[in-house]
Length: 93
Image (cartoon, rainbow, N blue to C red; front, side, top):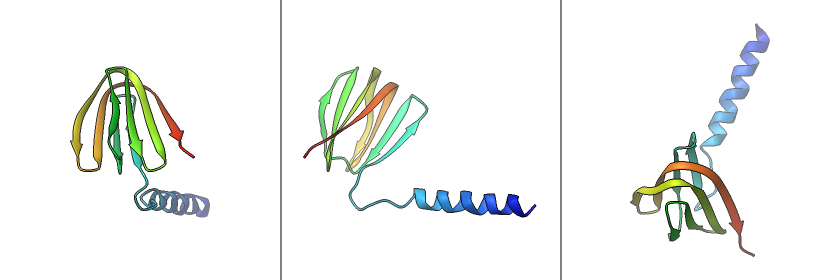
């Protein structure tokens, strides 16, 4: 029984750390292969139904898939829907 309580504490600790991020670094949340939510981006550089390039502080995120669509963009928050097949991180410098 003591093991079970220890496991719960470890899980709680890891979930609490999940919400912590470095200031102004991009935050990505992927929902299956159908939606990606990006916060703290610096704009969209390329936009097609197969590929979207999003600028972030350290370079670019390249999202590839089918039927991609920007369904919401407010301030530094962006939501992309469609069939997401790949997300690549391209670092500059």
